Image 1 (tube, one colour):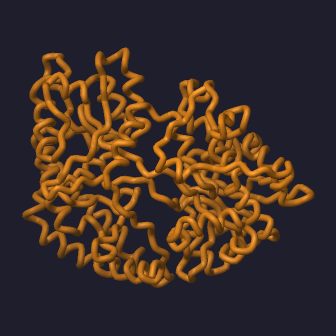
Image 2 (cartoon, helix red, strand yellow; image 1 turned 90 degrees about the vertical axis):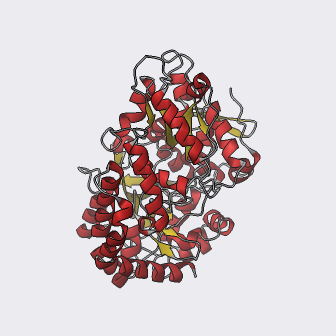
Image 3 (cartoon, rainbow, N blue to C red; image 1 turned 45 degrees about the horizontal axis):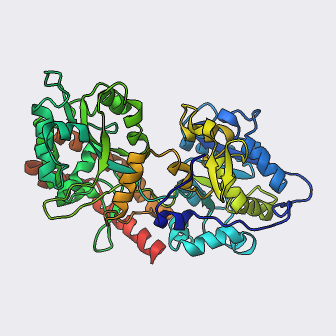
Length: 521
């Protein structure tokens, strides 16, 4: 059985103590209480295995035994994977289940909560949910981040754990073959990519290498950070950010973005970036690595590092490892992507719920030690064992050949309820190369604060909805054209900014900053 070995800084955020209680200390009700639930998220449209309510999650069965509360599926929109569409159907029906949960509920809950569709949770948590209250007290600012414009909050969110998500990866075996060092600056990275393009590191006598590739085309845009630009202010692509003056702006309207994207376009024109980056899609990593063609990317620590083992027998000497973000010309080393501490997913209590106290106690259960273990690791003795006080996945889980997170979804763990994730769940199936990379990143101050969103008033939302969709479309259209070389960002920049302002950019920024000042003080 493997023993966990996390850096001390990570253990400090995830360690759980083991209180000694009677077996029934988690009971909320003496007699079974049924609560209906809408649970819609991309991987399951319904509260049950694979979205099938007739197949009760093992985790749900365990929670029923511990608490006496039984969740019964009443999910709307089972014929669509669009959670926003499902939520609209639910709101329009006027027939609300007791609990409304799942994907992207923050915006509709904060819009309709102040109108009476959902119950404010402030006082309920204060009086009946000591574990959630303790979480808010130990994580200042997060409660404000989910609050609606009236100052109340209406949902308990899914709370990710851990700091690092994506990293820069490079073919160390190619570097070794060509006698090159890992690039420390953006200029050194340029020289390495040129060498990958020209010096046949895969040794097949063909100029077929793809120096830089990305599964998500948005990661091409993230390269602007290598020249002090920004591509997003959160873990969501194309998001707003808070600048050094404490004002909300959009990165695609900043001069640093202009300068960075001009360099990205230059790299693309020179064949350093995958020519099919906008069309190849999510298969890019699997194909280009397995065919010994790809040299450099920016992708998730855990899944990307897994290719060293997966391709060991196919690509001789294959060694794809994380390395520190190259320094920009001004000397800044930045990893823009990080795990956001709070998600717009979770669950809320509808106005038709006749048992709000019992429901908030049930929500609180998932923040107890037992509830947190259940929501992260599944069933003790079935999917994991406690070893020296640590939850350790069974070998049959780790070695099944199926992603651990998918196995957890099947039993009802790691689904988009309101719960606090435990990073120890992921660390166990993170390859050694990624662990070393995470520890390397942890030695440097390379992360940046995130924009956690705002809650609009009705009037602010109307302004945002009027202008932002078309602004975003225009920004992305010009962005792709500039990267592909069908325009010149430097020559066209002044006209671009003028067009943004004509389309309402300044109005959008004004309501964002008004909401930001109100929400965060």
